[in-house]
Length: 101
Image (cartoon, rainbow, N blue to C red; front, top):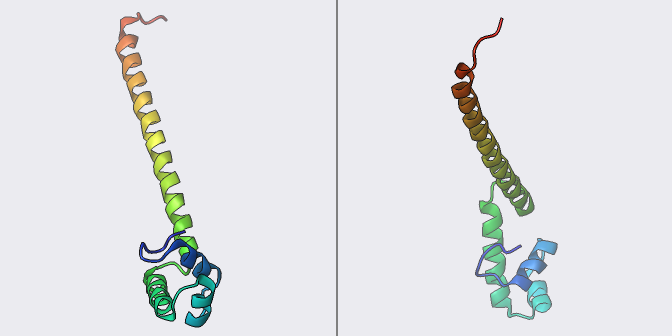
């Protein structure tokens, strides 16, 4: 999962697996300078603070659920439209038949 375009993928993975990591630990694990580690940590923490759900994972889950529900709504709208077309055609044909007692 990529949080910001400025954070490399390998650093993002380290931060996601250990959110309380310090800059020295991050710089040694990611093989980057402490200054870069401090920059990436600041970006990461600012992004987490900006997100409304408690975790970014939850935000991704909610986005995926939203996409699934949108697809379902579109499918149901197509079915309703098809049903309405069929009912209109049946209503057009029905008066042509004589009423039988």
